[in-house]
Image (cartoon, rainbow, N blue to C red):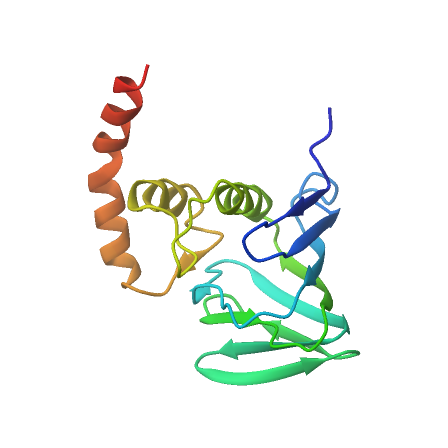
Length: 176
């Protein structure tokens, strides 16, 4: 059975339709159509260490903070974000923003997005959009080439996440 092509984040109201996946493009591209309702909620600042990302706004407008500079991208405009550049986005409204987002190469960002939306839907994200530390550590290591939050520095995250591996294993084994 093919994975669900549309996912919804019940916390933010964001919807994603997977138009082209790594499987479809031999790993070259993930293309998603997104619908972002107006909200002052911002996602955590992050980078894509090995991927270029872009957003083409079809309707509405989206604000992007890229390297600390806010840019408003309106319908008919596109923004490209090189690998390793800190960024996040949000929609201040007044209408839903409809975009096409692309990640090249695709790597495993689709799996990350599916996991993140599932965590949001299970109520497992804090007010800053972050899951509990043990889950963050697992996702952080699993998707370190796809996405990383910018704080604390990656070397600190990697050390902490690696130290927490045995804790995750112990907790998983005690739940059985």
